[in-house]
Amino acid sequence: MFSLKILLFLLLRHEQLSKGFPVPSESPEETNAKIAQDYLEKFYQLPRYIYKSERKKSASVIVEKLKEMQRFFGLNVTGKPNNETLEMMTKPRCGVPDSGGFMLTPGNPKWQRTNLTYRIINYTRHLLETDVERIIEQALQVWSRVSPLNFIRTSEEEADIKISFAQGDHGDNSPFDGPNGILAHAFQPGPGLGGDVHFDAEEIWTNTSENYNLFPVAAHEFGHSLGLSHSTDPGALMYPNYAFSEPSTYSLPQDDINGIQAIYGPSSNPVQPTGPTTPTACSPRLTFDAITTLRGEIFFFKDRYFWRKHPQLQRVELNFISLFWPSLPNGIQAAYEDFDKDLVFIFKGNQYWAVSGYDILQGYPKSISNYGFPCSVQAIDAAVSYRGKTYFFVNNEFWRYDDQRQSMDPGYPKSIASTFQGIESKIEAVFQQHDFFLFFSGPRYYAYDFNAHRVTGVDRSNRWLNCRSE
Ligand SMILES: *[C@@H]1O[C@H](CO)[C@@H](O)[C@H](O)[C@H]1NC(C)=O
Ligand SMILES: *[C@@H]1O[C@H](CO)[C@@H](O)[C@H](O)[C@H]1NC(C)=O
Ligand SMILES: *[C@@H]1O[C@H](CO)[C@@H](O)[C@H](O)[C@H]1NC(C)=O
Ligand SMILES: *[C@@H]1O[C@H](CO)[C@@H](O)[C@H](O)[C@H]1NC(C)=O
Ligand SMILES: *[C@@H]1O[C@H](CO)[C@@H](O)[C@H](O)[C@H]1NC(C)=O
Ligand SMILES: [Zn+2]
Ligand SMILES: [Zn+2]
Image 1 (spheres, rainbow, N blue to C red):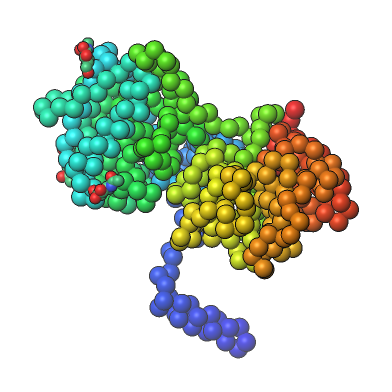
Image 2: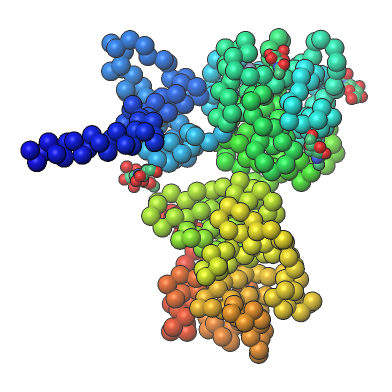
């Protein structure tokens, strides 16, 4: 009787629930396995297994392919579709496989000429035709600037690089998948389809920070048109996943410059161009531009990037600043979290921005003179908020701002060294944790105990990024 009642109750609940939500026919494990298998089939040449007799064999092949994928993206090589792996698999990306596949011609294909023609076959309805033409030209210049290649637009039928927007199945055995997921793909140098670039017409293509900006995707695909494959460097243009970048300030990363020059030789420009290199967490010379906590995590800013450290996770994630906050500049100089307002304030030069999670508040950037700095202060080295006061470090002095009264405390600036005993050098970044100020200067950090008024520990900065070696 008792159990029957419960059973009825459960059935009823199920009935009620199913009215509101479609009942999933699969367990989460099955869904995850399907996501992983689908991804590996598309990008890691996992064969499609149709027959039952092949299933057993497929399990071990899937594990191997998963490990290959995890190795490529620098994840923990477990062979299991764990959360970090699934998260990586759901990011928007290029449709070209990550290791030689059916869309890549074998060998090391290259164009035998340096003057190449391109033709724009059709357009996206989300941008004006002239905008698409300008963006395509800018995306090709990314490569011509650093190599001996020239690109000439043609309206003739035959062109080396044919550019089109197509949706779903479009006749090359590599159908698009609708919005998100695969954004575009391209073919390596060669006749016919060789060199051609296809964009998924079902994406919303933009010339802003909204998804998806056409410029970085086009520049990436042209890399394939010229003979480059995917790079494992997360900062490289040829990394498979989408990242927003602005054409007017874009500088091709060194990894991609090295790639294109390995195929076509140096630029014909007398001054060889160079590009940014991706910072490596475990470099002994690593320094940070700014550090802040954000809702329990720690963000370490460096150039165009930040590392994100979650207290419960081993892995520290490197991201582009533009991926989270497309309108923030690179090279942030200071940042602090205001816990009461649940905001992070970000500083560069004499401007600052207020950030709430992924959103930048309206009306920013503002001038740092709002805090009451004299005009002589044109930039902040580091900032941290603690017990209702915000500390701003500038050269060898610091200011203290009262968050309640919204004004600088009298008697400031004061000398850093005389207040924070043991902090002798210029501060580049600081954050606060458990009544400690963690000061970063060069490749070291100093743990300053706010209650004991002294430095209680010194170590290498990159310890915070879980680097143990060296
Ligand atoms: C994986 O993610 C799910 C949902 O996001 C969460 O419930 C689960 O605890 C996570 N597992 C691990 C091992 O982090
Ligand atoms: C390539 O094009 C440039 C102009 O864009 C021209 O000056 C040069 O002569 C051309 N080279 C060849 C080999 O056709
Ligand atoms: C962006 O694209 C839109 C639509 O094509 C156009 O109206 C606008 O002028 C473009 N803006 C810039 C800065 O190119
Ligand atoms: C654009 O051209 C390509 C190649 O000819 C074709 O497959 C595609 O359907 C065209 N797209 C549109 C939106 O007409
Ligand atoms: C990698 O996975 C193993 C096995 O699941 C685990 O013990 C280890 O902590 C993980 N390492 C990292 C860095 O996540
Ligand atoms: Zn690609
Ligand atoms: Zn295609």
